[in-house]
Length: 285
Ligand code: NAP
Image (cartoon, rainbow, N blue to C red):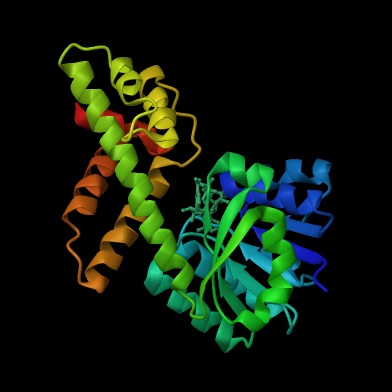
């Protein structure tokens, strides 16, 4: 019976997930490299550990929600030894296909269960326990991780039995999300720079076949200049790279995602890396 969970990484996503786990009544211990981001969770019922091994030592399930594969490998390289023998590692960061194999091997070297479990949804769904969990791994581990996935998500999709199956679906979904954002930015920049009110673009598509709530959300942010991060631009650049790698691995043409990657990199290098990926609109000028 799963009752204790360690959350490593309390950035935008991990902090919201930790709050959802506390609300579900689980015994939650958090750790973050920059302690100031973990500390406020103590007031909300989580234990705050001073280091990653200390966070994981008593946990049934360890959730990693760190920036990329290198960060996860570095932190779990130090912490795995301290986990219980029957602990299961639910790896929720978006790390791509190659790094998922590397992390699954790390777990296997220590004889620990591993579920590849990236999530769909941004800051608000993470806070509300409304993420969609995309799970890949042995189904016999499902009863152990189910209480955790039920707390952080509204739905779990078991994509397959292999580590990497969850990431494969996640990369396909993010290729869609990044494409909508970049295409919205292009339409807004084009209207604006031809001297037309860009809000008229959002008004024109509203409710029609080509509309989407995401285009309206990101389009509004681009027009108002509110780039408070929900899905950060640095993370979008990282994901675009992972998607290009996956397209090449699959034998598909990566040209579209390369162009999106390059636009997002231009905006990130121009000082917008810490902003929401809607700031890609800056790359068009
Ligand atoms: P974030 O707010 O930037 O948080 C990143 C976390 O990674 C922070 O806890 C950071 O610690 C930690 N970190 C980075 N490098 C590290 C290292 N070398 N060693 C230890 N810790 C390190 O990002 P986020 O939006 O929560 O994203 C986390 C993961 O979720 C990413 O893989 C992202 O692709 C994925 N994701 C994000 C969204 C979204 O909409 N935001 C949605 C789904 C999935 P510090 O605080 O010390 O920097």
